[in-house]
Length: 117
Image (tube, rainbow, N blue to C red):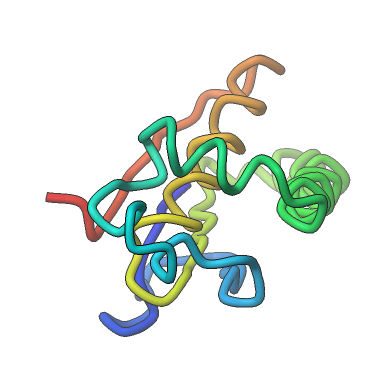
């Protein structure tokens, strides 16, 4: 799973790209700008919106449905990229949550936040 900001370009090696720019943006809350999707204030902000949970659930369902097919074709890895405008809040939050979900299911995962330094 890789989080990124669309304003910095889409990852070239992504197999799937999900656009999260339709979700509520913590950046527009002055007190949240300095945080990232790894920080509790942003997690609490995003966690209160049903559409954020729905997006996560639908991406999970899509991947759970199709990953076994890729595995049967001997696909050794897949890059799932999640993007928001700047790659600091929404994409980081959801990439982290998705990675944790799939790890809990026994799927070997890697997590990268491209825009976080």
